[in-house]
Length: 427
Image 1 (cartoon, helix red, strand yellow):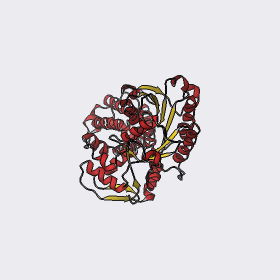
Image 2: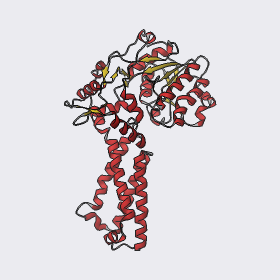
Image 3: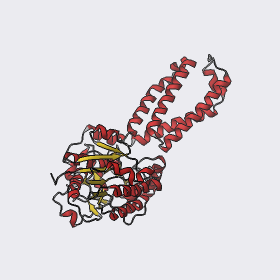
Image 4: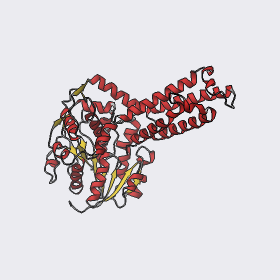
C-alpha cells in the first residue's frame, strides 16, 4: 500500500473512470466519498455517497459543499461531459469544480482528471476542459491528462470500439484507421493516482498513457481476436460520412456517437508522459498485455454485439410510432370503423379517439428520435401498448384472430420495448 490512506472525495464517481478510481482506492484502504448526480447504485455498492448535480446552481456555491467536506483529505475530480450545451459544460468543468476547490479544508490535496489533445482543438469539450484546468491550477490542484482509457468493463467510446470490432461482416474505422493511441488500463491509472495523491506532482498538466503505441485499425483487430471472432475486413469510413453520423448522434443524443467523438478520432490521441510520470514507482501495462490478461466472457461478446442495437431499436420503434400516428391522424373513418362494428361508442367518439391516439403516437416517436428520457419513454410505450391492447380487446376481440397477427403482435412488441429499456440503462 502506498502511503497512509485518507478520505477522498471523488467527483464523477458514477462515470467509467470515476468508478474504477472509487473501487481502486477503496481496495487500498481509502475512505471514499462517491459524488455523482445519481448515487443509488453507488450506495448499493457500499460507498458513502454525496448526491450532487454539478449542473444545478447550488453546486456552484462553496456553501453547498463545505458541510460535507470536513473529513476530506484528498479530492479526485473525474467529472466531465463530452457533448452537451455550453451551460452544462461550463457548470461541470468550471463552475462546480471551482466551488469544490474553494470549499476544501486547509491542507487537502486535489487532482483533476482532464484529457489529452485539448491544447489545439476548438471543440466545446476542449475549450471547457482548458478552462477547467485553468481553474484547477489557480487552486494548486494537480492535473492529469490520460489518453485513451480502457478497462475490463467498457463505457461510451470504449464500448463503441468493442461494438465496431464485433460487427458481423466488416469493421468500420474513422478515416484510414491509422490514428495512433497508447491506451492505459483504468486500474493502472488508479494505481498511479493513488501514488500521486500522497506524492503530488507539480501542477502540470501531466499526460498519462501506456507504453505501447497502436493504431485504431490494429486495436479493432486485436479486440476482435480477443472476442474470439473470425477475421473481418476493415471498412475505412470516409470523414464526411463519419461527421454526418456524428451530427445524427448529436441530434439523437447517442452518447459516444457524436461530432466531438468523431473529431477526436480523426487524429491520433497520444499521451506523452513527462519525467514526473515516467519516474513513478508504478507504471502502466501496454495494450497487448492488459488485453491478454483475462479472457473475453459471454458478457463481453453480448455487450459488443448489442451495443449498436440500442440506436437501431430506438429508430425502429420511432418509425413504428410515427407511422402509427400518421395513420391514426389521416386514415378515413370509413376504413377503420368497420373493424369495430359492435363498439358501444359512437362513430364520432371512435374517430376522435383515433385522432388523439395518432397525436400521442407521434409525440412518442419524436421523444424517441431526440433521446428524451429513454427510461421514462420505455415505460410510456409499454403503458400505451397495454392500453391499446385492452381497449381493442374490449371493442373488437376478433382482432386477436386476424391472419397476420393483429393484436397478437403487441406481445413481442412489449418484449422489444423491454429490451430497449435494458440497453438504454448504461449505469
